[in-house]
Amino acid sequence: MAALLSKFPLKERLLLSYYHYLQRLQQKVPKALRRSYDLVRDLQRQNCGVSIKDGQIQFTSEINGQDRTFELDLYSSDPGIFKQVFLEAEYHALVKLCQNAGFSPERMIDAGANIGLVSIYLTAFFPNMEVVALEPNARNRSLLKHHLTRNKLTNVKVKPVGLWSHATQLCADDTFRGGQDASFRLREAQSGEKGTLETKDIAAIMKEQAWPQIDFLKIDIEGGETAVFGPKANLNWLTKTRMLAIEIHDEFNCRDHIEGLLRDYGFQLDHSGELTLAWQ
Image (tube, rainbow, N blue to C red; front, side):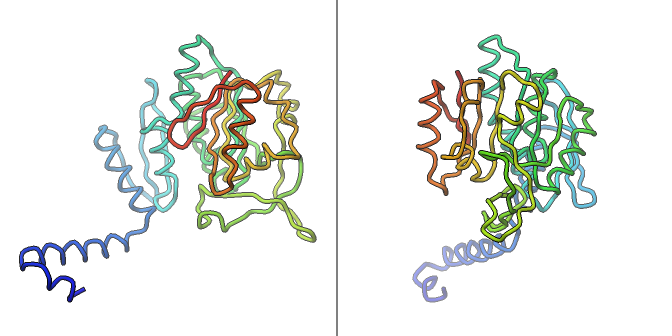
């Protein structure tokens, strides 16, 4: 580095030295902590009262004229997800589609519900909507239930299962995207391996709930969409689904296949942030 800096005049050399060491210092700050800092800064700009206690960011945020209380782990993916859902409003395009059509959704499946942020966001606009939230990860599911209780949301039913193309037993894959809490992924058990997590397909959930159709289907299951739309799947439920929001993970090279299937079933497509939106 010294040899490189020696080529610059003294003033610029000092500035570049400062820049170099600042970069090295920034790399020592964990990415999760940087996300938490960014969120707290953004919330303060919106005049939200924020406190940090027992390793959690605690605050109340207004959505559609209603206060919602949150507790997000400081060293987790939670702050980044909150920013996507609430501050960047990735799912608001679904709300606008419903409002423009004069349609009030009654039934939603939140597959990959994580800590419940999407369900909390959408029920602020559609308070009478019945939600089935699927979350197989115990840590995420505990925070999901906590948020529902804190915000007195009784119309969200939590199920400890993953969404798949058929009923089977799966194993957790902790290698996907570094094993972050927001990247909890399931995979089918290999020969001789015992699965530890239960799955359901969409048709089974609809039958359990006695639903004639799904108004919202949200899918963010870290690559599991390759199975949900895969060769073993019975996709008849697509004829009974009005709107979808899917995060398609391009690591699995399935975007063209899934979006092509949706078009074949008569859906119109658009994109909002990382989401593929489909409606008919």
